[in-house]
Image 1 (cartoon, rainbow, N blue to C red):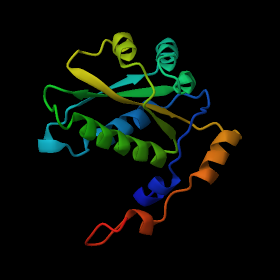
Image 2 (image 1 turned 180 degrees about the horizontal axis):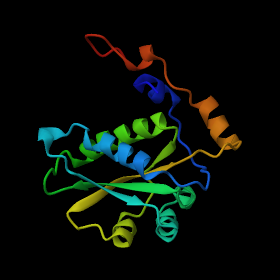
Image 3 (image 1 turned 180 degrees about the vertical axis):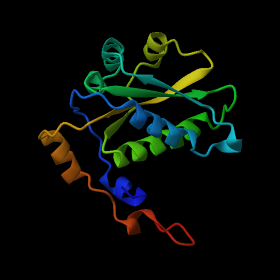
Length: 174
């Protein structure tokens, strides 16, 4: 799949088939993160790949909107090193994780970026060092085709803005 096609095809997937993701696909997704740009090329990221069902269940209980993570065969936890990049770790980890989202889509996988989690609990479950902050969680897996009325209604109510609404050439035109 071509890059722009993957960007256009990407959707937030909250329901997954109980099918493991092959290791080569996981590694390709992680390689996409590794190749991301970062401020001063510090690369202040660390990713914890969670496939263990019990750990995924515990992580899923850590956030109000994270319950579906127990169903995702893979959860990637994006962490940022606050010591090596105190100002930019959040941006850098986010860029790397967006690379993962696009790479996963190109591999025929679904993802969902999750910001609803109890950081202290996730750090405890995964033994994440103190100098790292958990930036986001990424569910990864094969999408389950199911009708989700709430998602459909939300998509209708909140369509993507037109380019003219979000871009000004030479000056802000909001």
